[in-house]
Amino acid sequence: MSEASETLSVAEVVTEAFFDGIIDQADSGCAGKSFYTRSGFLDALESFPKFGAEGSEEESLREIAAFFAHVTHETGHLCYIEEIDGASKDYVDEDNTQYPAVSGEDYYGRGPLQISWNYNYGAAGEAIGFDGLNNPEIVATDEVIAWKAALWFWMTNVHSVVDEGFGATIRAINSIECDGGNTPAVNARVEYYTEYCNQLGVSTGDNLTA
Image (cartoon, rainbow, N blue to C red; front, side, top):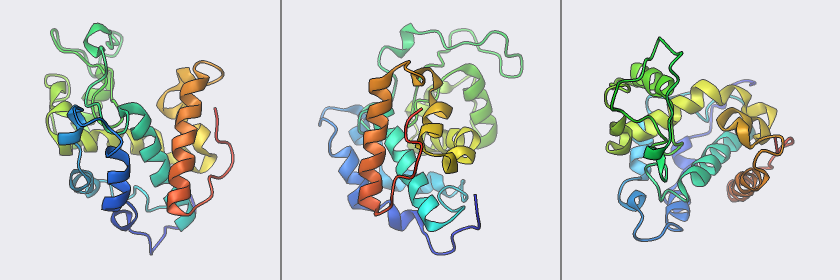
């Protein structure tokens, strides 16, 4: 990315109206309706000052739009805190010795970006300050940690490719959708991204799909 934007404030971009425009589309019975808040996001953001703050103002706005496009897709407009039927899926990489899975714990998707796998929970916990391997459930019970886990994943895996286009961010988050793996999901992510770019008054840039 190029020189840092000195004028952009993520808090001023992610207004209450912008945030509510996402979560208000979730059904009233959704667990996320009483869990996810703009203030929780902003609290977590304090630990990640480079989010939306590197590059030109245009690049920063695209990063914010991209992040919330993926969050919207992963959580159904901030409806879901946990992956649907996640407990029935096995997200354990037994070959990962740095962050070995703990017997009895499940590492399915949780939080705004549905963080999953033992190695992600372990690394996120180490970086943020929670026991990701022994207590992955906290990502679904502590809102600030949930947002921090999402922002950690973003800054670790996605932030560096934002300037390559939205398609690169899809590949970084869920590569199995790419190259025809799940075209409807890719198209849905692109649709949200385009919508948010329009709201923020910035062009989408090139390379939208992956």
